[in-house]
Length: 145
Picture 1: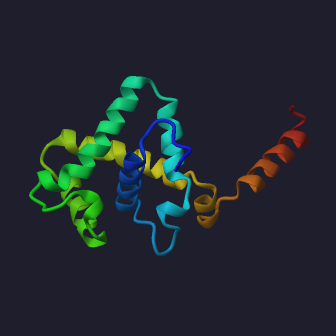
Picture 2: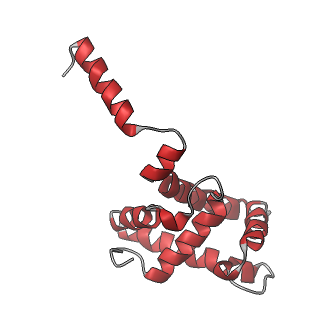
């Protein structure tokens, strides 16, 4: 992870863990560590305004510590897959709408980062090259530049 520009290796690890919990890709899709999800998130933050970057980085730490704050005995990255699933269910169903909204925000970022990976897209049946080829053929057939 030496190519990180906006997040630390620890934050990258937290994001990968959160993404793994939120997306739960295995066994059908590749694990988060085999995608460019973390690098995408880092690049996105590097291009974001400083206040947004600070806020999202702070949210990563909040997610990491949230199991401790909700009565758990360890932080998020130390939970096994079942523990992370329980954590996710609990955080998605808390009474405070602001917490649910923040969870949706982070979940959206995680999904965008994970499902934007070329390998994941291909495994889901999306062929960007074929779409580009069809678009170019259509433009040519219609006489558009």
